[in-house]
Image (cartoon, rainbow, N blue to C red):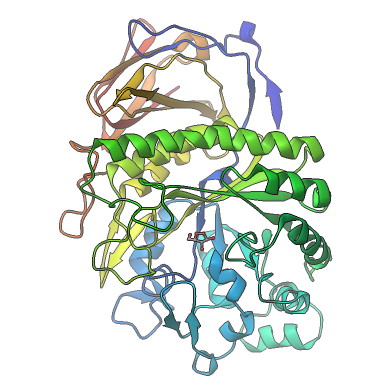
Length: 510
Ligand code: AHR
């Protein structure tokens, strides 16, 4: 829902980062930030599902009906709005019948994309939809286009959503589920230009038209929101071709963008920790490219169908795996750098939130830029988890655009914005989130409260640490977490925030 902000109505803001920062006001549109921007992704990859979300009922690790208790509670606390499953590349190898029915009868499969690991299929369709119901989140199902058929997809949709008396629905009931489940989003293939079938955009567009035409819910014969498999980062031709040929057959189109410390998909991507400033700077710089990317793709989409939303349904940092971890399992540690990448990326998503449908960080547990990491019966919350938790205040809040001239963070002669920010309002309460990416210099930010009709500050919180490669280990799980912050104060109606180097701060005002 869009509405124009009138400067005269005192929603014009002044935000300054230092004495030298130019103060400006914004006349841009305001809108509601969809909660789905804070979405998650759970793929059958490494220890994301097995030993992450799911340990099975007979495990010694505390669980509720097979769902790992500590992980479930941490995710429940995060207010996850939507969860994508079963992949990723895995989705285009997945045959749903392998994962339903009595567990002992389910066939084992080899996860060919991710380390060749054998999986017993004890986590399948019923376990996924039940998990989403327990978490209270929307469901995003990726269907197999690469190695499946339209009939497989239809049988699966009938199993999940059907109400009539027929074999697929009766099978679901026999498996213990009377009522249909709810599918909110359906992804028609994944990375169809790569692991999902190596297709040309023209070929995929035709296939997409065929699959999407049958991708209806059996409960009421309507479509869930259909997500076309979109581009890899800067491949604008993929988006253009797909929109031109199938833009009227979709509600959403996706985009995948990963930040690699060393942009070499075939070689070393750079370590997950112990890196120097070049790889800190490079990651934050490349994270900022999300702005150009989102804008580039939504401009193309708008040429063909303004109603189609962009979903960044895979994003985050992709480093080398932790040394000694199982090849292909993409297990990496998570540092303060990654938390700053998350907060600055959210600021970009908020800026385009009227054109974004959802975003899903990769991935929720034990894979890439994860929310939580597990080791045997231990679990840690990552710095990125704390950013998601801190930023949850922006979910479904009114975005209030700001203009400000950021000071610069310069490294080796290259400069990027040192300051990134979002202001939003919900139920009469304002939240200002600020990130100072500069590892050496503090930043001072001021905001005149009268300009947003606020009168006082309620509280302020901070995420920071001494070094950009600090992380939460199983031995020291609380190195980085949300702490109360005393560097923000209001005097004579002006909020002043003294942001330490490498910090993420939220100030609540009313
Ligand atoms: O998230 C890991 C992988 O990255 C996904 O399976 C795939 O879609 C992407 O290439």
